[in-house]
Image 1 (cartoon, rainbow, N blue to C red):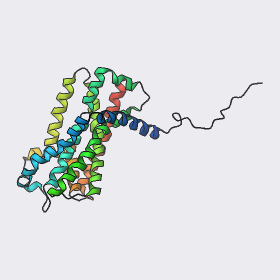
Image 2: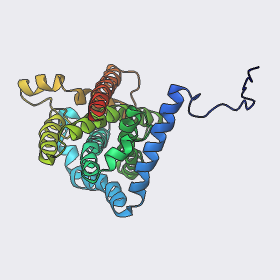
Image 3: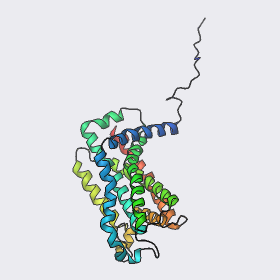
Image 4: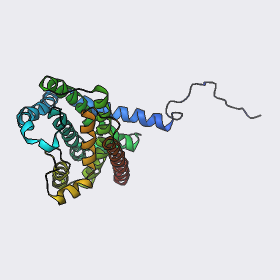
Length: 274
C-alpha cells in the first residue's frame, strides 16, 4: 500500500506563487531601496545636488527677461519658460549617470554579485534609474517654492504630470546609459566620450536654455527629430498651466517611446552580459 503525501499547509509560497507583476514591483523596490540608501548615507552630495538648481536660477534668472523675447509667454514670468528646462537638464544628467555608476561596480565585482540574485533583469534597470530620478522630485519642489516669490505661478497638478513624464523618460534614458556602461566595460573613456558627445547636442537642440525660434533653419529641422524637444515643450506647457495641449501629448508619446526602446536595449544588454 502506497502512502500518499499531502500538503496540509495552505499558506502560499511567497516566491513561487507571486505574480510576475508583483515580483517585478518587489524587485524594483528592492533595487531602488538599496541604491537610495547609498545616496542618503552621503549627505554632502545630496545637499550639493539640491543646491545646484538654485545656482542656475541665481546666475541665469536676472538675464531671462531681456533675452527670451520670442521664446517667452506673454503675461507670464520668464521663470515659467526657464524653470522646466532646468528640471529637464537635471533629469538628463541624473539618469544619464546610471552607466557611470555601473562602471565602478563592474570594476569591484559588485555587478556580478547582483546578477547572481533572482532579481528580474528589467527591475535592475528601472530601480537604478528611479534612484537617479528621485532627487529630482525634491529638487523640483525646492526650486519651485523658491521661485514663487520671484514671479513663478505654481500649478501643482500640472507640475505632478510633468514630473511623471520626466520619470518615464528618465527610466528609458537610464536603461540606455546602463547598456552603454556594459558595452564600455574595461574602457571607461568610451562611456564618458559617448555620453558627453550625445547629451550636450541633445540639450542644445531641444531649446532647453535658449529658444530655437530665432535659430537657423537646419537647427530647427534637427530639433524636430530630437525626442528631448518634445519633453521640453511638454514641460513648458504644463508649467504655464496648460494641460490639454498637443505639446503635452507629444511629450507623453516621446517619453513612452524612449522608455520602451531603452528597456528593450537595456534588458538585451544585461542578458548578453550573463
